[in-house]
Length: 374
Image (cartoon, rainbow, N blue to C red; front, side):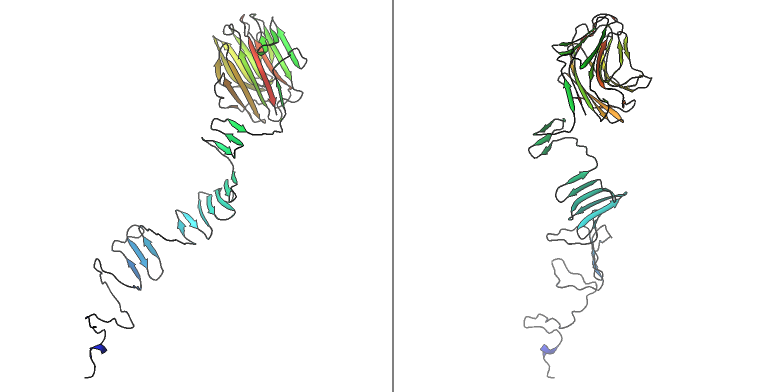
């Protein structure tokens, strides 16, 4: 026999280590690898999985035929690349992530529109790559809006602008000369309407039939083009808390006598002060000419002698009117909105009036200033 050990399959070498076989690596079936052991390259016909594998729950599974793999947790220190599939419910596209649910679509993209959200096909929020934000509505609950260093709006509604322009027309008065023909006056029962230290002084005196009224002529339909009206009122007389009385400050005209005001059949919007029982309550009131006296709010606030109150109303076309006030040095109120009996045409004046409602007590007030803008 001429063969020696070196010619047999997988012979031992000088260190008694078997020399690997050439060619086919062979097959291993159910062969465990002990702890601390290792294996070189592994080729599988079907799959590899852990003994505790449960689909989408525990363990891992790798399908050698399809390439499908499942892992309970994965940590990857390098790159992950995917052009299809889902992540967090978002479908993976070549350049975007998107999800559709409940008729809405959210998309994050590297295209011109970086972010879009809202009803599918009609997003209500978009952000462009250039930083342009487009929204259909916005509600900011706190913080501050800064536009560079030139403009700021804080959470209290205070705004600071370096420059501002408006295409509105604004008229103002501090009633320096109530005798001027620009103002119309009507008084009775000893009531007076004069220029005083505080502005327009309306004083019916302590007569049961006294009243005083002043109109501020504007020369156009005063309800048109969604105007804003404001006035500053001061309660002057120490006698004003006795008896009864009514003060009106607003747009349009009503009928005032010593016995009170006629609200029905009139077109107006403004603030009504009702004195009764030692208190003066402030309301918002408006009418479109209806015979029922119009719509009136609940009590906005109460005032006393020497109180000062800022009054603001903003007409929202013919749909509604917002009313605001600020008492003394307090903060401006939230809007009180009234959407019925909105006046739309037929008046040209702002109107200020006071009466004693048939009681012999003075109701001395001053209209410090007024403004009208549209």
